[in-house]
Length: 443
Image 1 (cartoon, helix red, strand yellow):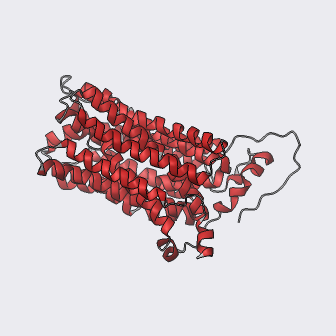
Image 2: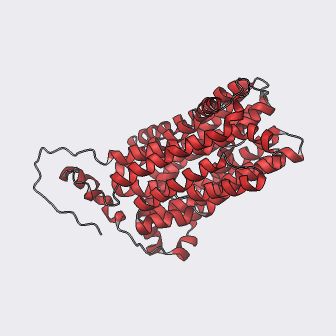
Image 3: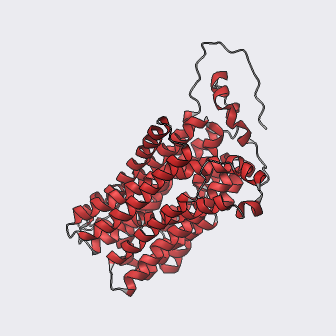
């Protein structure tokens, strides 16, 4: 357990804001994460043309990242609980940055699959460890808000990646009429961003927030309730976690959420090109809308949650209501997008589906923090693991559905919509606030 050295405190002393730097680090890392993750979806048409990828091979490429990311999520989250997020996050970011760059060096399908698998393995554990940081560094009332800010930044980082990728690709091509030819060096540029972040983070961050000398006593008192979570080498009761109904409800709702959402960062540019017949420039700018709208869903979710609790609604009911609105809304607008021939109207509906999708995000991760407690890294890793099993299955199934049905994009949307709706049902049975320690003690 962390021990703080008390010192005399003036009654008028105001808390410093050292803790807010962890939100800055989380925001910048979320942006870098989604730039590195989304850039391949925009480069996919050019990669497919150069490497001769079929729909099925492209689906395996997307799935290779997601499933590696899923497999290593729980180990990554557990390591954050065990040795602290400082070393773990630094290693994670260096690893994935190297394999982001390596994506531009591939020469055939096997090399692409191996590279994307290793990229996914490297990125795994990022958000569980950031959740662990929030659990340790922030007072209770700021944790949900921090999750909302982080996921807003992640989505907007991904949203503006298409025009950014188009710009970087254009720098490295000798044929201005075909900027897509510059996709290879673009990956090296994006890989450098993570290396810079890792160096600055490792220099500044400490697992124990009270080791930062610029933090005054008022701020230490403010966050001291979470200090016990910074203690390393926790014993994780794996068998009892696996037997918990709430853990499974938390994981299954995230599976359903991620299945539908991964379309926006994998197949969307291909859909815009093949189903809506857009050129590279139009793809880049219309491709902004879904993740931009998703980003807005995060602060909207936090504000709606605050409004409901201020009116006396319990946190449990508030989270269930917002999550069900989000998942059923995503279901409805994804179906509605298939009704239009106009590309703009269709993409606006897809963007609204993304907005409703992200209404769930802050409360799903806040529930992982509340249920997890001192096991927050491990439990959020488990939730993200199962989510990315769904996230890997989504792009994989889309590729096969397109191959089996001669590119019936509408059917892929109907399947995703049905899975969104199932996610709302899991929320009805989820207790999103009772810590796992209390559940284990009661069992």
